[in-house]
View (cartoon, rainbow, N blue to C red):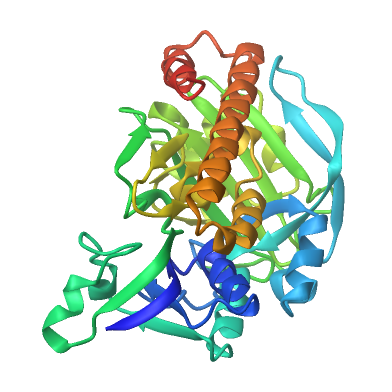
Length: 363
């Protein structure tokens, strides 16, 4: 049986950084369990996500050898345009952020992981069958081939799946997101966009809708438009969603952009608030608290947790960490409720149902 001081479940940015941090601290060998390596980077693909993160996060990534240009962070932003409590949009100052390519970040961290000899990597779905595994346990999925392992500390960074969770709290009517992506140099049938229109602005834009909201953000290479909510806020064709924006007087979100029909459309996936608990692992990132984009810095918060997770081997340290996570959940829920109460459409059924669920996150 192989013994590890730290085992990490999940190979998203949070899981990889937790493994790299544990290895750097001399916690190795470290075991990383993942189903598959990150998908290849394709800026024209339908799943090419952009995320807004604090500028300070770039310093952390530089410590691990990831230069800003590798992840599309070429411009800082200190302004956002919002249409929330009325049908008029306004420009508001915001702490400095950068827009990064999430797939590029995953690939860059993955390459750093492959170069770290103190991290033992296991790929394949079988590696994730952890019903009898965890801190102080063995991986029974490998028991037949003599490849058992034991870990003093199991860190679960498996995202919303929260594979080792003993309980998961999520809405019975979860909100979903539909991502539309367009590369600056993307060729569409019969058309070619060498650049966007002169009045295009790449800063973060957010507009409320009767059953959800829409936001957009961009890098010099890629544009994202994301519809979040339920019902008409996320259903229908690209043309119907564009008409929805105009009906809500939020067509300005697409100002300077081609028609939404020319974007690559992705499948809907759940994005509403969710949290979990575990008795045999330390949950970090989205596995512990999947935040709503309305009031979050989910990626940066998850990466911050990854830095301290390897030090949570004692019951006291773990209890303190989980208490901080509970406080962060309550603060996040309070911020969400305040935004819903100030929303132009806050009295609509979809918003009221969501607010009622969010109230449970504060207990």
